[in-house]
Length: 614
Image 1 (cartoon, rainbow, N blue to C red):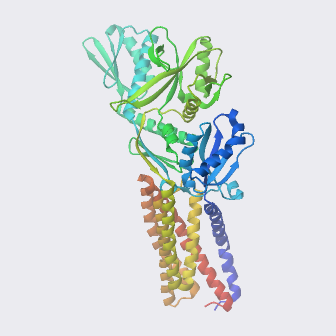
Image 2: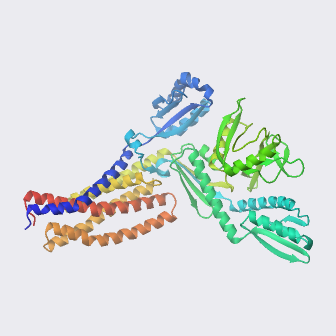
Image 3: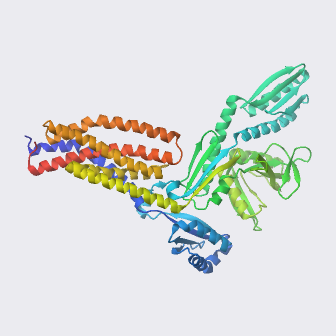
């Protein structure tokens, strides 16, 4: 028999571990709280031009609200967002109709800009901690799915064309008069007679220095030496990887510029990219920006020779085939208006682009410089074709550095789109949207309701079974189960990049089963120890200790499966894998450690009431 006073060392022994578990549970519970406050979609209405802001403040606000109510878009709440730039925020009674209301307002009020904006409804103190609800996937929040095909063959061909054009310049610079250049199906060739062998080697060295991924193959036929240039096998593979990496980075930048924070952008197969845009109710703008393959380059004019480019307003102009610098050196871009009210784009260059512009403008003050806009499109035969046109030709009035403007844009919308594309970066390869799927927000809401109903049903039956079958230990298991679900939701809310999908809800249901399974194994071990005649406290200690290896083995094999699913899966499969993996972690934490602490605490409390322990 142990005296009551002997329990103090035992409590001190577990005090630190209990406090650590308590702190972890409190932090995860706080991070789960924002999920009780779902975000709401508002219509953000602003004037197209700041000059017309007073019209919105005085008359248009009432007209907008009346129009929405009359056309079946019942307004729940409206408020003015700013005094300096009057604008209107409108919340509909049915937020799922926000996209339809947006289109109706655009058609009726051409002078207004209407955007759907998501606002958090959680308390300010939660938002100040940077906490937000779990990000919902496409099948729960509604939205748009795009699958893009990246034309790597076309990208390689463009690189070879660039190398071909630069080879012409190298031949002129090296004064290699005996060297002749010719294109072929695989790339291009240099031909030279023995008298021009040194010039041929100089041109070859300069070209391979600029294009490291090209391979040179030399063969001789009679007196004629031929050097063929094409992509090496390794160079081709490295180039494709680089193009895919740059394309992913650029697309992510464009999505961020659109203000979509919960997008999923990942590589799918060798040359495809999968983009999920949850919550996007108007896919037209996203499609226009994401699918755009625009690039911008700056060229010097050539009076004689050069390469012919089409002017935007008709006609042609000859430019140096090698750009002064390209859009990849643009750090920032903003649309605006000049002193005559015409749209323009203000550019800011990086150090390399600034140096190139500074050196060129210093030598060419008073001379023209052309801005060439290029994009890919499919012709009537279905082939991807690159179209380049000169959108601006302006004289360099002064020595420029890393900041200047592109003027004479066609429209404010064209200026805004160009600025957005330049900020996010241009695509180095043409992309084609091969799959597009739109899921309405009402369908997403149905998925959430059905998924949560299944979760609650499964959880209710499980709680009832454990309470009836294991009595006191069942109470411990049920508390641990509720803590497990809370911890899992909190962990998913806390980790960046975690998205909850409909299969993810299935993962939550599975997590409940695994957590209960853990407790069943432990409790059956405890029963065995009690049948052997052990005291309650010893039975609990031995039950948890002996069951741990079995639980660990079962969970580690399931974790391996979850990792594999996450690595090779896309979309919903990845969402299921994330929920499963995180559920395994929280199940072990609550099912083993937390429930053990609760069992021991319950035993000590009962023993304290009786005065002694057996």
